[in-house]
Length: 196
Image (cartoon, rainbow, N blue to C red; front, side, top):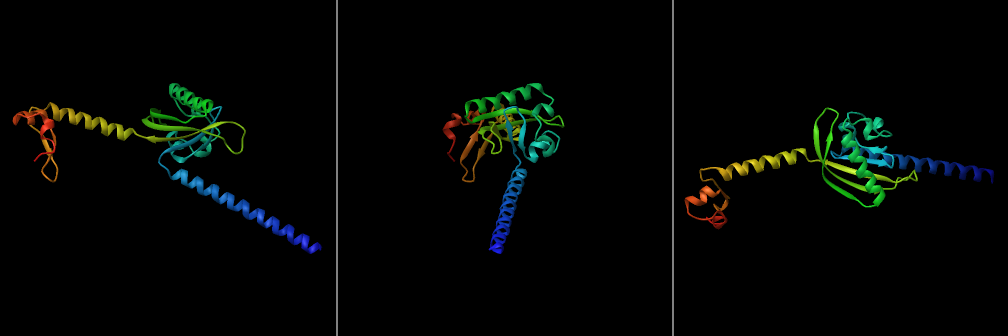
């Protein structure tokens, strides 16, 4: 009987150890996944303290994940206005319990570069605490906005050109023409689009 009890205790201890190992492996895998993402991924509590941050977030602040977790935006960001806006948005999400889409916000990185971010923040209830928090993901849209501005400038230049400019697709149909080109043929630009 003593051997049976001892065997059961050993079996239970081994199972607990396996369960802890599986849980740790799952945590490690999730950490690896969020660190591979190019987006900034973070969670902050009601005081603004980072509960979680991925490598991209830490890189933007010029620090490591270990240094960022447990700190706040104010510990790393130079812009008080940005810190205040981040904090205000975080608090709004926590207070309302509703997600918030932020189509464009700025972040000045540790190297002084200003990035445009598209951010989603959602309410988050951390497992290990009783406090409320916010989970966020920010996508760097700096290059996208820059390309859009360049395209708008090129389009405006083409439209303002005195020479007739047109673009045809592979079927030789007009897909673009400026007004000068339409004037050459005495049409409105929209009338010729789609024709050959």
